[in-house]
Figure 1 (cartoon, one colour):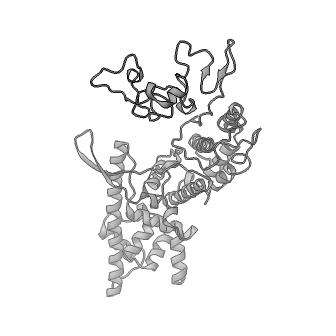
Figure 2 (cartoon, helix red, strand yellow; figure 1 turned 30 degrees about the vertical axis):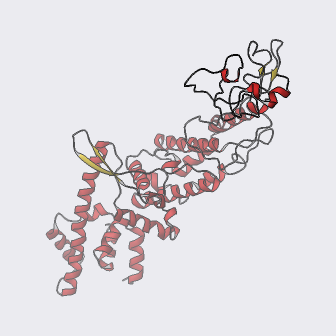
Figure 3 (cartoon, helix red, strand yellow; figure 1 turned 30 degrees about the horizontal axis):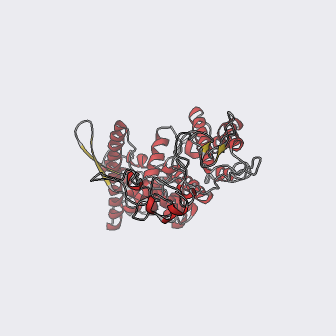
Length: 432
Protein backbone atom coordinates (compact mmCIF):
# COMPACT_ATOMS: atom_id res chain seq x y z
CA UNK A 1 0.00 0.00 0.00
CA UNK A 2 1.24 3.49 -0.86
CA UNK A 3 2.48 5.69 1.95
CA UNK A 4 0.56 8.74 3.14
CA UNK A 5 2.57 11.30 1.12
CA UNK A 6 2.05 9.45 -2.15
CA UNK A 7 -1.67 9.18 -1.38
CA UNK A 8 -1.95 12.89 -0.63
CA UNK A 9 -0.12 13.85 -3.83
CA UNK A 10 -2.31 11.63 -6.02
CA UNK A 11 -5.50 12.88 -4.39
CA UNK A 12 -4.44 16.52 -4.90
CA UNK A 13 -3.61 15.85 -8.56
CA UNK A 14 -6.84 14.08 -9.54
CA UNK A 15 -9.52 15.65 -7.33
CA UNK A 16 -11.72 18.65 -8.04
CA UNK A 17 -10.43 21.54 -5.87
CA UNK A 18 -13.91 22.13 -4.41
CA UNK A 19 -14.24 18.50 -3.34
CA UNK A 20 -10.70 18.51 -1.96
CA UNK A 21 -11.46 21.63 0.07
CA UNK A 22 -14.65 20.00 1.37
CA UNK A 23 -12.77 16.88 2.48
CA UNK A 24 -10.10 18.97 4.20
CA UNK A 25 -12.76 21.05 5.98
CA UNK A 26 -14.52 17.91 7.24
CA UNK A 27 -11.16 16.29 8.17
CA UNK A 28 -11.76 13.21 6.03
CA UNK A 29 -8.86 10.78 6.43
CA UNK A 30 -6.32 10.68 3.58
CA UNK A 31 -6.62 6.91 3.15
CA UNK A 32 -10.39 7.23 2.65
CA UNK A 33 -9.84 10.10 0.18
CA UNK A 34 -7.36 7.93 -1.71
CA UNK A 35 -9.78 4.99 -1.79
CA UNK A 36 -12.61 7.19 -3.12
CA UNK A 37 -10.41 8.81 -5.78
CA UNK A 38 -9.07 5.41 -6.88
CA UNK A 39 -12.69 4.34 -7.39
CA UNK A 40 -13.36 7.33 -9.68
CA UNK A 41 -14.97 9.72 -7.18
CA UNK A 42 -13.05 12.87 -8.16
CA UNK A 43 -15.78 15.56 -8.46
CA UNK A 44 -18.31 17.11 -6.12
CA UNK A 45 -21.28 15.77 -8.09
CA UNK A 46 -19.81 12.24 -8.13
CA UNK A 47 -19.37 12.37 -4.36
CA UNK A 48 -22.97 13.56 -3.93
CA UNK A 49 -24.32 10.71 -6.06
CA UNK A 50 -22.27 8.12 -4.21
CA UNK A 51 -25.30 7.19 -2.11
CA UNK A 52 -29.02 7.93 -1.82
CA UNK A 53 -28.83 8.99 1.85
CA UNK A 54 -26.55 8.78 4.88
CA UNK A 55 -27.64 5.21 5.68
CA UNK A 56 -26.79 4.11 2.15
CA UNK A 57 -23.45 5.91 2.43
CA UNK A 58 -22.69 4.09 5.68
CA UNK A 59 -23.35 0.73 4.00
CA UNK A 60 -21.18 1.76 1.04
CA UNK A 61 -18.24 2.70 3.25
CA UNK A 62 -18.42 -0.43 5.38
CA UNK A 63 -19.03 -2.97 2.62
CA UNK A 64 -17.22 -1.51 -0.45
CA UNK A 65 -14.32 0.28 1.23
CA UNK A 66 -14.03 -2.13 4.14
CA UNK A 67 -14.26 0.60 6.78
CA UNK A 68 -15.18 -1.30 9.94
CA UNK A 69 -16.57 0.70 12.87
CA UNK A 70 -15.36 -1.56 15.64
CA UNK A 71 -13.37 1.24 17.32
CA UNK A 72 -14.12 4.82 18.31
CA UNK A 73 -11.44 6.15 15.99
CA UNK A 74 -13.02 4.44 12.99
CA UNK A 75 -16.45 5.76 13.96
CA UNK A 76 -15.04 9.31 13.92
CA UNK A 77 -13.54 8.71 10.47
CA UNK A 78 -16.91 7.45 9.20
CA UNK A 79 -18.72 10.43 10.74
CA UNK A 80 -16.37 12.87 8.98
CA UNK A 81 -17.17 11.32 5.59
CA UNK A 82 -20.91 11.55 6.31
CA UNK A 83 -20.52 15.23 7.32
CA UNK A 84 -18.71 15.99 4.06
CA UNK A 85 -21.41 14.11 2.10
CA UNK A 86 -24.27 16.10 3.64
CA UNK A 87 -22.40 19.39 3.13
CA UNK A 88 -21.90 18.51 -0.55
CA UNK A 89 -25.65 17.89 -0.93
CA UNK A 90 -26.51 21.27 0.61
CA UNK A 91 -23.92 23.16 -1.44
CA UNK A 92 -25.01 21.63 -4.75
CA UNK A 93 -28.71 22.28 -4.11
CA UNK A 94 -28.13 25.92 -3.13
CA UNK A 95 -25.79 26.45 -6.06
CA UNK A 96 -28.38 25.08 -8.48
CA UNK A 97 -31.07 27.41 -7.11
CA UNK A 98 -28.78 30.47 -7.26
CA UNK A 99 -27.69 29.62 -10.81
CA UNK A 100 -31.29 29.28 -12.00
CA UNK A 101 -32.34 32.59 -10.39
CA UNK A 102 -29.45 34.56 -11.89
CA UNK A 103 -29.87 33.07 -15.35
CA UNK A 104 -33.56 33.93 -15.39
CA UNK A 105 -32.74 37.48 -14.31
CA UNK A 106 -29.90 37.70 -16.87
CA UNK A 107 -27.27 38.34 -14.20
CA UNK A 108 -23.84 36.89 -13.53
CA UNK A 109 -23.95 34.45 -10.65
CA UNK A 110 -21.56 35.65 -7.92
CA UNK A 111 -18.93 33.23 -6.70
CA UNK A 112 -18.83 32.43 -3.00
CA UNK A 113 -15.79 33.54 -1.05
CA UNK A 114 -15.05 29.96 0.03
CA UNK A 115 -15.13 28.71 -3.57
CA UNK A 116 -12.98 31.63 -4.71
CA UNK A 117 -10.35 30.92 -2.05
CA UNK A 118 -10.31 27.23 -2.99
CA UNK A 119 -9.75 28.09 -6.66
CA UNK A 120 -6.99 30.61 -5.89
CA UNK A 121 -5.26 28.10 -3.61
CA UNK A 122 -5.35 25.53 -6.42
CA UNK A 123 -3.91 28.06 -8.89
CA UNK A 124 -1.12 29.03 -6.47
CA UNK A 125 0.07 25.42 -6.43
CA UNK A 126 0.89 25.93 -10.13
CA UNK A 127 2.11 29.55 -10.37
CA UNK A 128 3.25 30.22 -6.81
CA UNK A 129 2.04 32.76 -4.29
CA UNK A 130 -0.03 35.57 -5.84
CA UNK A 131 -0.11 39.14 -4.59
CA UNK A 132 -3.46 40.81 -4.16
CA UNK A 133 -3.01 42.89 -7.31
CA UNK A 134 -2.28 39.74 -9.34
CA UNK A 135 -5.42 37.93 -8.19
CA UNK A 136 -8.43 38.45 -10.48
CA UNK A 137 -11.46 39.86 -8.72
CA UNK A 138 -14.36 37.62 -7.74
CA UNK A 139 -16.65 39.46 -10.16
CA UNK A 140 -14.27 38.86 -13.08
CA UNK A 141 -13.77 35.17 -12.24
CA UNK A 142 -17.54 34.71 -11.88
CA UNK A 143 -18.10 36.30 -15.30
CA UNK A 144 -15.60 33.98 -17.00
CA UNK A 145 -17.03 30.93 -15.22
CA UNK A 146 -20.53 31.80 -16.45
CA UNK A 147 -19.27 32.19 -20.01
CA UNK A 148 -17.50 28.82 -19.95
CA UNK A 149 -20.51 27.07 -18.41
CA UNK A 150 -22.74 28.53 -21.12
CA UNK A 151 -20.20 27.52 -23.83
CA UNK A 152 -20.06 31.16 -24.99
CA UNK A 153 -16.75 32.86 -24.32
CA UNK A 154 -16.97 36.63 -24.91
CA UNK A 155 -14.26 39.28 -25.21
CA UNK A 156 -14.39 41.62 -22.24
CA UNK A 157 -13.16 45.20 -22.38
CA UNK A 158 -9.96 45.84 -20.44
CA UNK A 159 -11.72 48.02 -17.87
CA UNK A 160 -13.66 44.89 -16.81
CA UNK A 161 -10.41 43.05 -16.02
CA UNK A 162 -10.10 43.89 -12.33
CA UNK A 163 -8.00 42.58 -9.46
CA UNK A 164 -8.80 41.87 -5.83
CA UNK A 165 -6.87 45.02 -4.94
CA UNK A 166 -9.23 47.13 -7.07
CA UNK A 167 -12.27 45.24 -5.76
CA UNK A 168 -11.78 46.39 -2.19
CA UNK A 169 -14.24 49.00 -0.97
CA UNK A 170 -17.10 48.00 -3.26
CA UNK A 171 -20.44 48.61 -1.61
CA UNK A 172 -23.90 47.10 -1.89
CA UNK A 173 -26.66 48.40 -4.12
CA UNK A 174 -30.40 47.97 -3.55
CA UNK A 175 -32.92 47.59 -6.37
CA UNK A 176 -36.50 46.51 -6.99
CA UNK A 177 -37.08 43.85 -9.64
CA UNK A 178 -40.08 43.48 -11.98
CA UNK A 179 -41.99 41.49 -9.34
CA UNK A 180 -41.60 44.22 -6.75
CA UNK A 181 -39.09 42.25 -4.70
CA UNK A 182 -36.15 43.97 -3.06
CA UNK A 183 -32.73 42.81 -4.23
CA UNK A 184 -29.35 43.66 -2.77
CA UNK A 185 -26.40 43.15 -5.10
CA UNK A 186 -22.75 44.10 -4.89
CA UNK A 187 -21.91 47.13 -7.00
CA UNK A 188 -19.31 46.26 -9.62
CA UNK A 189 -16.47 48.75 -9.85
CA UNK A 190 -14.69 49.03 -13.19
CA UNK A 191 -11.03 49.82 -13.55
CA UNK A 192 -9.41 52.42 -15.78
CA UNK A 193 -8.20 51.34 -19.19
CA UNK A 194 -4.46 50.58 -19.44
CA UNK A 195 -2.42 53.74 -19.80
CA UNK A 196 0.94 52.25 -20.82
CA UNK A 197 2.63 49.03 -21.87
CA UNK A 198 3.28 47.78 -18.33
CA UNK A 199 -0.35 48.34 -17.39
CA UNK A 200 -1.42 46.31 -20.42
CA UNK A 201 0.99 43.53 -19.42
CA UNK A 202 -0.56 43.46 -15.93
CA UNK A 203 -4.10 43.15 -17.37
CA UNK A 204 -3.06 40.24 -19.58
CA UNK A 205 -1.47 38.57 -16.56
CA UNK A 206 -4.78 38.89 -14.69
CA UNK A 207 -6.56 37.36 -17.69
CA UNK A 208 -4.11 34.43 -17.64
CA UNK A 209 -4.77 33.81 -13.93
CA UNK A 210 -8.54 34.03 -14.50
CA UNK A 211 -8.31 31.35 -17.20
CA UNK A 212 -6.34 29.16 -14.82
CA UNK A 213 -9.16 29.61 -12.30
CA UNK A 214 -11.61 28.41 -14.94
CA UNK A 215 -9.35 25.47 -15.70
CA UNK A 216 -9.30 24.49 -12.01
CA UNK A 217 -13.09 24.64 -11.82
CA UNK A 218 -14.10 22.99 -15.11
CA UNK A 219 -12.56 20.18 -17.13
CA UNK A 220 -14.37 20.87 -20.41
CA UNK A 221 -12.67 20.96 -23.83
CA UNK A 222 -12.58 24.77 -23.95
CA UNK A 223 -10.70 25.10 -20.67
CA UNK A 224 -8.61 21.96 -21.14
CA UNK A 225 -6.64 23.54 -23.99
CA UNK A 226 -6.07 27.06 -22.69
CA UNK A 227 -2.47 26.57 -21.60
CA UNK A 228 -0.97 28.31 -18.56
CA UNK A 229 -0.21 31.77 -20.00
CA UNK A 230 -2.05 32.09 -23.34
CA UNK A 231 -2.13 35.90 -23.36
CA UNK A 232 1.64 36.28 -23.04
CA UNK A 233 1.99 35.79 -26.80
CA UNK A 234 -0.58 38.54 -27.40
CA UNK A 235 1.29 40.90 -25.08
CA UNK A 236 4.61 40.30 -26.83
CA UNK A 237 2.99 40.82 -30.23
CA UNK A 238 1.29 44.12 -29.31
CA UNK A 239 4.40 45.55 -27.63
CA UNK A 240 6.75 44.40 -30.38
CA UNK A 241 7.93 45.72 -33.73
CA UNK A 242 4.69 45.01 -35.59
CA UNK A 243 2.41 47.18 -33.42
CA UNK A 244 3.81 49.48 -30.71
CA UNK A 245 7.21 49.99 -32.39
CA UNK A 246 5.74 50.20 -35.87
CA UNK A 247 6.79 53.43 -37.62
CA UNK A 248 5.27 55.28 -40.57
CA UNK A 249 6.82 58.03 -42.71
CA UNK A 250 8.01 60.88 -40.55
CA UNK A 251 8.69 58.58 -37.54
CA UNK A 252 5.08 58.78 -36.35
CA UNK A 253 4.21 56.25 -33.63
CA UNK A 254 0.82 54.53 -33.19
CA UNK A 255 -1.58 56.23 -30.82
CA UNK A 256 -2.20 54.21 -27.64
CA UNK A 257 -5.99 54.09 -28.16
CA UNK A 258 -5.39 52.56 -31.59
CA UNK A 259 -3.37 49.74 -30.00
CA UNK A 260 -6.13 49.09 -27.43
CA UNK A 261 -8.75 48.93 -30.18
CA UNK A 262 -6.65 46.46 -32.14
CA UNK A 263 -6.07 44.34 -29.02
CA UNK A 264 -9.81 44.14 -28.39
CA UNK A 265 -10.45 43.21 -32.04
CA UNK A 266 -7.98 40.29 -31.79
CA UNK A 267 -9.65 38.88 -28.67
CA UNK A 268 -13.10 39.30 -30.19
CA UNK A 269 -11.94 37.38 -33.27
CA UNK A 270 -10.58 34.65 -30.98
CA UNK A 271 -13.95 34.30 -29.25
CA UNK A 272 -15.78 34.17 -32.60
CA UNK A 273 -13.52 31.30 -33.69
CA UNK A 274 -14.13 29.43 -30.43
CA UNK A 275 -17.89 29.73 -30.77
CA UNK A 276 -17.75 28.50 -34.36
CA UNK A 277 -15.51 25.48 -33.73
CA UNK A 278 -15.95 23.54 -30.48
CA UNK A 279 -12.81 21.47 -31.14
CA UNK A 280 -10.53 24.53 -31.38
CA UNK A 281 -8.47 25.42 -28.33
CA UNK A 282 -8.08 28.93 -26.96
CA UNK A 283 -4.35 29.10 -27.70
CA UNK A 284 -4.88 28.09 -31.33
CA UNK A 285 -7.77 30.57 -31.74
CA UNK A 286 -5.63 33.38 -30.31
CA UNK A 287 -2.80 32.55 -32.74
CA UNK A 288 -5.25 32.74 -35.64
CA UNK A 289 -6.49 36.14 -34.45
CA UNK A 290 -2.94 37.50 -34.26
CA UNK A 291 -2.06 36.10 -37.70
CA UNK A 292 -5.21 37.50 -39.36
CA UNK A 293 -3.82 40.02 -41.89
CA UNK A 294 -7.27 41.37 -42.78
CA UNK A 295 -7.93 42.15 -39.11
CA UNK A 296 -4.58 43.94 -38.82
CA UNK A 297 -5.25 45.91 -42.00
CA UNK A 298 -8.72 47.00 -40.85
CA UNK A 299 -8.06 47.87 -37.22
CA UNK A 300 -4.42 48.94 -37.21
CA UNK A 301 -2.67 49.64 -40.53
CA UNK A 302 -5.42 51.60 -42.32
CA UNK A 303 -6.39 53.87 -39.36
CA UNK A 304 -2.74 54.46 -38.49
CA UNK A 305 -1.70 55.44 -42.01
CA UNK A 306 -4.80 57.64 -42.38
CA UNK A 307 -3.86 59.50 -39.20
CA UNK A 308 -0.24 59.76 -40.32
CA UNK A 309 -1.19 61.13 -43.75
CA UNK A 310 -3.52 63.76 -42.32
CA UNK A 311 -1.21 65.00 -39.59
CA UNK A 312 1.11 68.00 -40.21
CA UNK A 313 4.83 67.26 -39.97
CA UNK A 314 5.11 69.54 -36.93
CA UNK A 315 2.62 67.41 -34.99
CA UNK A 316 4.05 64.79 -32.61
CA UNK A 317 1.36 62.21 -31.74
CA UNK A 318 0.82 61.07 -28.19
CA UNK A 319 3.28 58.53 -26.86
CA UNK A 320 2.13 55.40 -25.01
CA UNK A 321 0.85 56.52 -21.62
CA UNK A 322 -2.00 58.72 -22.86
CA UNK A 323 -5.15 58.09 -20.82
CA UNK A 324 -7.94 56.72 -23.01
CA UNK A 325 -11.41 57.43 -21.65
CA UNK A 326 -13.36 54.93 -23.76
CA UNK A 327 -12.83 51.84 -25.89
CA UNK A 328 -15.27 51.96 -28.78
CA UNK A 329 -14.98 50.58 -32.25
CA UNK A 330 -13.23 53.12 -34.45
CA UNK A 331 -12.86 55.77 -31.73
CA UNK A 332 -9.52 57.24 -32.70
CA UNK A 333 -8.10 60.55 -31.39
CA UNK A 334 -8.99 63.67 -33.42
CA UNK A 335 -6.43 65.13 -35.77
CA UNK A 336 -4.75 68.45 -34.86
CA UNK A 337 -6.40 71.66 -36.08
CA UNK A 338 -5.69 72.60 -39.68
CA UNK A 339 -3.34 75.53 -40.43
CA UNK A 340 -4.85 78.94 -41.42
CA UNK A 341 -6.49 78.96 -44.87
CA UNK A 342 -4.47 80.36 -47.79
CA UNK A 343 -5.26 83.63 -49.56
CA UNK A 344 -8.57 83.59 -51.39
CA UNK A 345 -10.58 86.05 -53.45
CA UNK A 346 -7.83 88.66 -53.55
CA UNK A 347 -7.93 89.05 -49.78
CA UNK A 348 -5.04 88.30 -47.47
CA UNK A 349 -5.50 86.27 -44.27
CA UNK A 350 -3.72 87.88 -41.31
CA UNK A 351 -3.18 86.08 -38.00
CA UNK A 352 -5.31 87.51 -35.17
CA UNK A 353 -6.97 90.00 -37.54
CA UNK A 354 -8.84 87.65 -39.89
CA UNK A 355 -9.46 88.39 -43.57
CA UNK A 356 -8.24 91.77 -44.71
CA UNK A 357 -11.17 94.11 -45.21
CA UNK A 358 -13.71 92.06 -43.26
CA UNK A 359 -14.09 94.74 -40.52
CA UNK A 360 -14.98 97.67 -42.79
CA UNK A 361 -17.41 100.09 -41.21
CA UNK A 362 -16.17 99.20 -37.70
CA UNK A 363 -13.52 100.65 -35.45
CA UNK A 364 -10.00 100.13 -36.68
CA UNK A 365 -9.19 98.23 -33.48
CA UNK A 366 -12.48 96.29 -33.22
CA UNK A 367 -12.11 92.54 -32.80
CA UNK A 368 -8.38 92.55 -32.15
CA UNK A 369 -6.85 90.94 -29.04
CA UNK A 370 -6.46 93.68 -26.45
CA UNK A 371 -2.90 92.64 -25.67
CA UNK A 372 -1.91 93.66 -29.21
CA UNK A 373 -3.58 97.13 -29.22
CA UNK A 374 -0.95 99.89 -28.89
CA UNK A 375 -0.92 101.90 -25.70
CA UNK A 376 -2.88 105.18 -25.87
CA UNK A 377 -5.51 103.87 -28.33
CA UNK A 378 -9.19 103.85 -27.25
CA UNK A 379 -10.76 100.51 -26.28
CA UNK A 380 -14.23 99.42 -25.19
CA UNK A 381 -13.32 97.05 -22.37
CA UNK A 382 -10.88 96.79 -19.53
CA UNK A 383 -8.29 93.96 -19.55
CA UNK A 384 -10.59 91.88 -17.30
CA UNK A 385 -13.43 92.15 -19.86
CA UNK A 386 -15.66 94.78 -18.21
CA UNK A 387 -17.35 97.29 -20.53
CA UNK A 388 -16.38 101.00 -20.39
CA UNK A 389 -19.02 103.74 -20.68
CA UNK A 390 -18.68 105.56 -24.05
CA UNK A 391 -20.73 108.63 -23.11
CA UNK A 392 -18.66 109.20 -19.97
CA UNK A 393 -15.55 109.56 -22.15
CA UNK A 394 -17.32 111.82 -24.73
CA UNK A 395 -17.02 115.53 -23.91
CA UNK A 396 -20.08 116.36 -26.04
CA UNK A 397 -22.43 113.84 -24.42
CA UNK A 398 -21.37 112.79 -20.91
CA UNK A 399 -23.23 110.01 -19.10
CA UNK A 400 -26.58 111.14 -17.70
CA UNK A 401 -27.81 107.66 -16.77
CA UNK A 402 -28.42 107.44 -13.04
CA UNK A 403 -27.73 103.67 -12.89
CA UNK A 404 -25.11 103.10 -15.58
CA UNK A 405 -23.85 99.51 -15.60
CA UNK A 406 -20.63 100.35 -17.42
CA UNK A 407 -17.40 101.55 -15.85
CA UNK A 408 -16.69 105.27 -15.69
CA UNK A 409 -12.97 105.09 -16.40
CA UNK A 410 -10.62 106.29 -19.12
CA UNK A 411 -10.92 104.37 -22.42
CA UNK A 412 -7.27 104.68 -23.38
CA UNK A 413 -5.28 101.45 -23.50
CA UNK A 414 -2.86 101.36 -20.57
CA UNK A 415 -4.70 103.99 -18.49
CA UNK A 416 -8.18 102.98 -17.19
CA UNK A 417 -8.01 105.63 -14.44
CA UNK A 418 -11.13 107.27 -12.96
CA UNK A 419 -11.29 110.24 -15.32
CA UNK A 420 -12.81 110.71 -18.78
CA UNK A 421 -10.63 110.12 -21.81
CA UNK A 422 -10.63 113.76 -22.94
CA UNK A 423 -8.99 114.77 -19.62
CA UNK A 424 -6.29 112.10 -19.83
CA UNK A 425 -2.68 113.26 -20.32
CA UNK A 426 -2.03 110.43 -22.78
CA UNK A 427 -4.98 111.60 -24.89
CA UNK A 428 -3.65 115.17 -25.00
CA UNK A 429 -0.11 114.02 -25.89
CA UNK A 430 -1.39 111.92 -28.80
CA UNK A 431 -3.14 114.96 -30.23
CA UNK A 432 -6.65 113.61 -29.60
